[in-house]
Length: 365
Image (cartoon, rainbow, N blue to C red):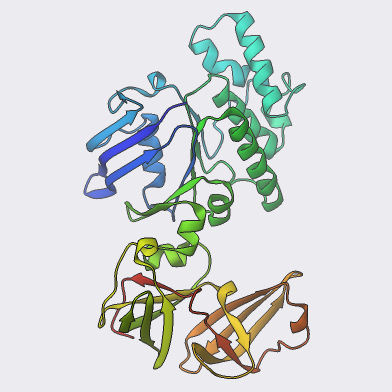
């Protein structure tokens, strides 16, 4: 296992900046995820850690070793690519053994290590099969075994589940996480899928346009986003421009949509302080919204446009009186059965402990 540290790392391609001044430390044994949309810099960062790209500026460290200019084969990393990069003309055994043969390992040790690696990914007995004879999930596990067999200090996975169907992705998420936990290997995972990031990671780095927007645990990133991009990209949210009207200790009063809201704001959790006159955003997750019988503090009237019953929850899309869309989700509420109808006008309440303030407001408040 190794600790990874990126110090002021930047990468450019021509006039395009793919990664800008990235400072990041990934702890030993951690499952760390790079999350963001296509072209945000997450795969470029992973490839710099692997050694396939060299940074234009900055340094990369594995523990106390500067590996910035060390070639990939000397970094002791295992890489699983999005398309698996398996050799179709080889058997499963030959694919997994390839990295060991390049390293001039003895045939006896290769056999033992390949056997163990295939057992780890639950492919014992598949050694003689051709790649074309395997399902997508089995091919993914072969790629994983090939990376693990060389006993890397760091495991790198570049969107390894994106080619699988939804059900298989769910199964493979659990398998990868279980294997990582049992091995204790430092793992860096790239994905654009928020569900993967939230369900698998010890910590997440959210990227956008080459800049790391926030680093934190899944709970921190989801419940305390540092800006509007993180709030809207990681899960669904309702986002309204607002202006701070009054600050009294941890209670902040804001004006938004011609309505006044009281919010509980803790500077140590949010990372920023607020003052009267500040323009920012007011945000609340759909599951944080309440349904109440009459107007009161922190309430808004809306017209229900869509109601979807999902078995254990109701997913609702509504529209406020000024035309702003609003999403709400009610979990484990059998009392709402038959009460939520499209076209009805309802009252939503925003509890002050579920509202969040984030920087970056505009002039629409």
